[in-house]
Image (cartoon, rainbow, N blue to C red; front, top):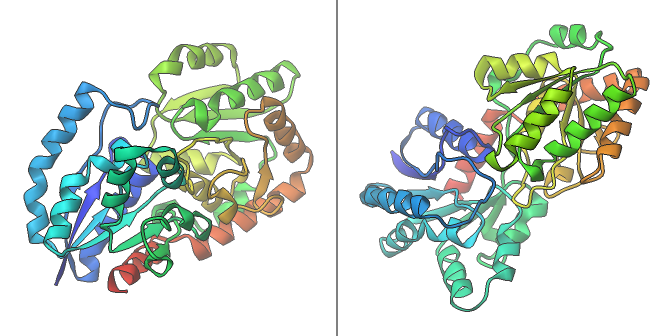
Length: 361
């Protein structure tokens, strides 16, 4: 029985990476693998990813006490961050695994690693490259993101594994058809409420629609970045048709996704890869409004799955919401297409099988 050690973040907090790690961890034993984990989740939420703080340094120093687990496993599967610090905090695990001739698989959940490498200079650049070149194989979220790893591995050792939607979110097509009868725009945002996820532009668009007398309902869910807390709460005070739901998961998340019919993620997040939340929105028959950013074009086509909105533009968001309401039949065709596409292509089974294929390659 092959032994695999997963080193990376696990919920909580829930992010695309931590959710993927949890699902991988839970499913590996069913495939005749022995699995162990080291949780690198930093529990204090803020938007300053890759930044240093005394608390962070202390946290990651403590994490290294689990290094003995490297000895007991055959494959070391890592989901590091995409900044210098995000990679270096895994250095002891990587170097020991390399010394012991363990297989090292690095799974990059984003499109920033290559950009970070290009901006680094001198010793930091050499350390970054040295650590990532210790990898036996690399995984990215889609074909267009492979360039993030080509500086460190030959192309035949870089694999693309698409994200997934958890099985519990899929419902019978009869419920989807019933949902599609509702004509009132029901808008949902399901992500961390960070600047770069476009939340402030969405809230401004909703405020503008409300002032114009446009009929809609909206629910916003996710963790609020402390830096934006005052501004976001001020928007919520002004918005009469928008509800903040806090952090949702499990059946609460499912209910939210099934309640909505327009899923909006106007992201320009520098670390973005292939948002699981977009796939979740598709699986629950929502029209998608998002940006042409990072790996999103690999899972989303304009006017097939929904509409692109311009980055950093509340006006663009407002106009696309209005248009989708006026073009109800066209929007519903896209909603049902999304449900079928996700059901056929973005399943946990495919995700697990694809990573196991990489391990066996």
